[in-house]
Picture 1 (spheres, rainbow over the protein chains, first blue to last red):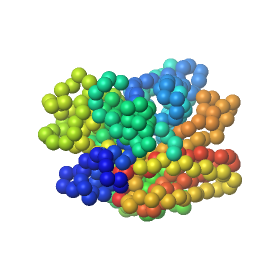
Picture 2: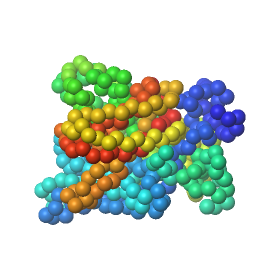
Picture 3: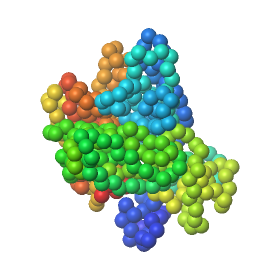
Picture 4: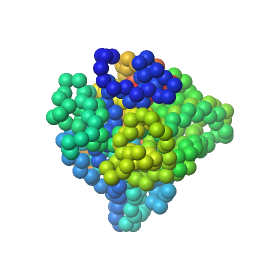
Length: 130
Length: 264
């Protein structure tokens, strides 16, 4: 590492020699920074099985997004949203996709009528590309 | 931006003028902070089970976790997956204020390894009862919160009592998949001195006409629908691996961050 910048080590480690995994923070690498966060909901209306909500982030590039959603309506738990959650088993299935202007949370569940599902998401300022 | 705070830019960018995405750190924005890391080794009980990992934070945190399944003992995968031979499966059942639940489905007495990172940032929004005390380090509080008296994790934009998520690099990888429905894997060196955590996205080639509102979009990896589509990543001590197993041939574009946070 170049001999400048800021490093903070974990307790018990010499910051001058600590390996990367023992650093709390190092200015050598970007840390995940939250550009935007907020709650949202998706409603599946009667006669359909898919509902989705797009949320603008206005960054102009595709950021990292981590989202957490109700496994099912009224649940006290939250699931990490990835491509499809869950991969098998009990509906609803949930999806999160992201582009340069929006992130979109999708719920897919048949035989529901005007059901709303809640989610919360963090949009990073950090760009999802090399 | 207000004319105060801490900003550090990436090399080659003027800290006074560069965009937020080119900053290593800025006190204008919250920095994701790891409030607790838990290593778990679990010997499965029964044909399948729900593992509860108690985090003790008192709020429902956001999180990442990684799994080493009993069949592939050199590979760490993310929150959902299926092993290729014995079809061991696991997936996320979610977090609450007490624990993270993970579904494990291998064989009785099989051994799983799970590494979980629980964040100070909540999975259901603000409002944390967790207390982080200590009068050393660097702390930057949220606007309107006295940095000297703040103790709840969520009151801080930055608190060096908690490790940050460090983006060492982002690896872009395209797989031109021609082996449908068989599995294709590609591995690249991650050049880390340990097995790192990772997080990324994959562009899935959906038809917007057939699957609105899908289309060809970037989804958080993995994208797994057991029996139809299994697309994702894993890490070993030296490699970042990408895999595709899909019902149709297509092109898959991955963009995955190698994180300076250690799995093992």
